[in-house]
Length: 95
Image: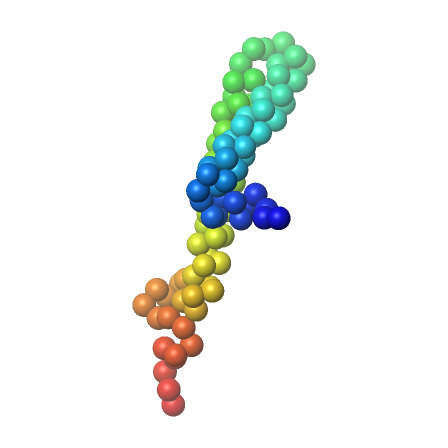
């Protein structure tokens, strides 16, 4: 069974659904936190702020998974992610 991060990295329908779930769950969780803060403080706007923070954090988590997948695929190709003009062990200078 693949993790949610692997689904996001793989793309396709499963990656799209995993991305949507990250955003929706983030919005739901932080909206509940905002709702609780609204109840304690007697305000009505923190729930909206919580939903925005949740959506942004969900998108950021998806971004982190995509970056990790990119790093992993470059490492498996033998390419150095810090020097794209060199690739693999054969590009080392010979004595």
